[in-house]
Image (cartoon, rainbow, N blue to C red; front, side):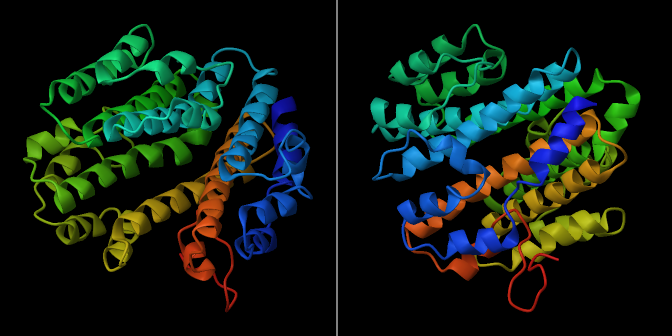
Length: 357
């Protein structure tokens, strides 16, 4: 299949461990740009100014993701194209979260945000309109005729009325929309294709639900019923009876104990993060790495096909996320070796082993 062969070609252009370390050793953002010019990203840097700012570089990098999505979608028909488009929802959701945070802070700079937002031609939202929104009521109006509205209307209303002050319920509703949309689109694929990709998207469902339970136990005083209401309606390996039991755990450590018998890999993923000084960041990184490993397995599974393209594209999304984080680490002069620990790609470190394994 054409998309599978194309995915193999693009996979060969993903950044190597050595290129990751080289980027991490940069002294400034323009140096990152200079180094990326000699990689597959260079062809997208033609319009960048000589004095490249962080947002300019991040925008160009994200354009790679959109361009590759378009090149894959050109060869797809329904229901494959509909499923593949859901892979762009997370990209759009991250931008919406940026808008939400600027509105909540009261420091919304429309033009500064505009520099960061790259609209896909498959976008469900008018970015010009969303950037014009002055408060959460106007955000709801902009989203009214989009698929987002049903999921976000209530948390937006609560924020606007002052009943809610935290963005967490709104961002969680957005994440739930993304995951639910992908799961629904996955169900419409042929059984063989669906089963090939469940190691990525089924695991995402499990880990999303566990992450919500972890956060509820670590940071919020929620009842078991309130926790369960925040979970995805989809299930993979962890079914509802087990989720009900986990919702009655009294701490994150107890959560991992209860998981360990039936789901030792998930339990280890959470428990190994609890002792980290940045426990939540560590857990987020380990979740991404676990899904990264599943995507690599899907990519390697059998002859090239639709599943190969999806596996590759998930890996590419993680590479874009890593590049954005590397730019941030370099800009704020964080310790590079420590920074590497929280990247998604399991790059080798001193001693030749992957830190997260």
